[in-house]
Figure 1: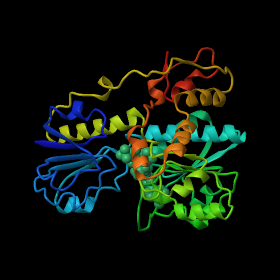
Figure 2: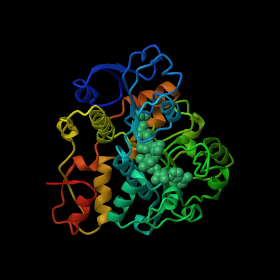
Figure 3: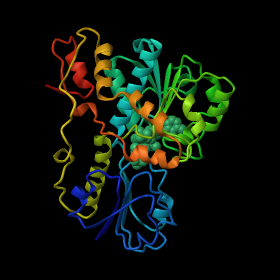
Figure 4: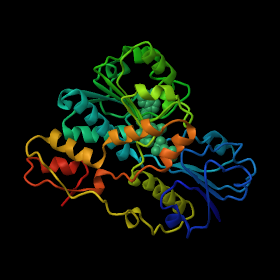
Length: 374
Ligand SMILES: NC(=O)c1ccc[n+]([C@@H]2O[C@H](COP(=O)([O-])OP(=O)(O)OC[C@H]3O[C@@H](n4cnc5c(N)ncnc54)[C@H](O)[C@@H]3O)[C@@H](O)[C@H]2O)c1
Ligand SMILES: O=C(O)[C@H](O)[C@H](O)COP(=O)(O)O
């Protein structure tokens, strides 16, 4: 069996080499002829899987993406050919939730906000929204969820409307890119919604660029509107609107989910799916491959205030302002956008970091954020 996988999938050789004959490709050069003899195609979000790419292949029996988002895959087309498709929903939910926390802490420090007094509006209560909600609950930060598809489907959590979300101090977007229909998300934050935001609010987009109208944001900034935006994702990546970057409070290159764990979990999920499809015993696991963290053990300095103590720890593990500075310095076109993503430094999740909570008044809460006890 020939297994083709994208070169940006960590540990793909370790997971797939024994399952078949592996071929590695880059999204920049992959084409229909190259994939003509593939039995299995494994991608990340940078490879567009469609009729054109698969036009010379008649033997594919499995396509999968090691990502949460699936907008780069023409699933209708795969269905017409009866090719099963799997995605890695949830693989990087914790990474994105930790990214959002870092963005909130950096913003709070910059503007002397007390996060304990703020309310966070989470749009999209799937894997990422739920992971973020859990972290905010541990930290005692008030938050609201908006997810009409889940509400309509019988999810019993308390949901609010978008109008209520618009009143929140922090609004963070975790929806798929849906181009049309009842639950359309494309252009969800259009000029009308962006205009309603005040300088006191923070809007974070770490889902898909097309959910927030980038052109409208640029026009508002150019008219003098003050908006507090954190953007990890951009309209039309990698060829993004460079003029928008200087206006963005924290700007990053679609790396919110790029912890080692987040990316590698995606690979592991596809390995498990392929083993299941072929009725093979899965005998490999991610924990055998992940390196030990180079940070830590960290020590909790503050002994009383959970938010203060947690914020210090979180910024030691992941300080988004470092990514923001590097991005603003380097991003000058599509090649550079790709380069920054491909050469993203090693980032770990809280679960890889040992913390000595010492005499801290609420050590259970520290470990509930995911950190490892000493
Ligand atoms: N920046 C990154 O690195 C990164 C990482 C992971 C995911 N993502 C993006 O974030 C999205 C969410 O990830 P996830 O793993 O939580 O996906 P998910 O599918 O688990 O959750 C998405 C949620 O959005 C809800 N939703 C759909 N339409 C909606 C609407 N109109 N209004 C409100 N809610 C709506 C769905 O019901 C679902 O619960 C992904 O689709 C992907 O595009 C980006
Ligand atoms: O949808 C996802 O899972 C994320 O956007 C993911 O982080 C994209 O990363 P990429 O596949 O582009 O490396």
